[in-house]
Length: 239
Image (cartoon, rainbow, N blue to C red):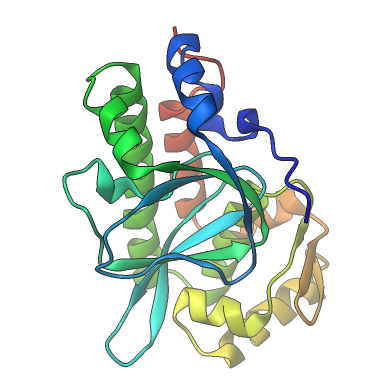
């Protein structure tokens, strides 16, 4: 696969001030992020951080018996590997490519050098981390208090925000693994959304037909997360 990704396709890279971006560009390595690729495992020392452009990465909590549930998703708005600059070399979660695409990676020690300058990069990464923590916290609340259909709507909307089209390539079995629920529950919820005319699906392929209606059927969790990302991560370059 030809790597044609543009670093400006990642929102964090695109909002770096010119001086910082000029230092980063020669160090960024374009990468092909294939479906199912594990970017890091629980407890493993991070060698790189990743900046997706067209891919989506799922951050998963994995139990001792192998069961897992999604904590958050990272796409073109973010960075994979925040534990590196939050004071730890590793994390108890696993990062897996949920939707194939492209991105860039940067060696861990180079990111730390930039972060430790205590300048614009540090402030940008800390704002992103606050937004990501909000997504994780809201996911926990959603999984505890809202219906599976509402959770599925939230998950689809978060995915659409990070994709170039209204199509999500994901089997119901994998969605069930992400949400930490039984596949039969996802099948029932997806079937109801299909009956309402909000989505269509075939195996491994979901198309959203009516996004406004999907947003109305979602719980408030999606709106809370989106508002926080919009507030903390402006789309224009930093001064």
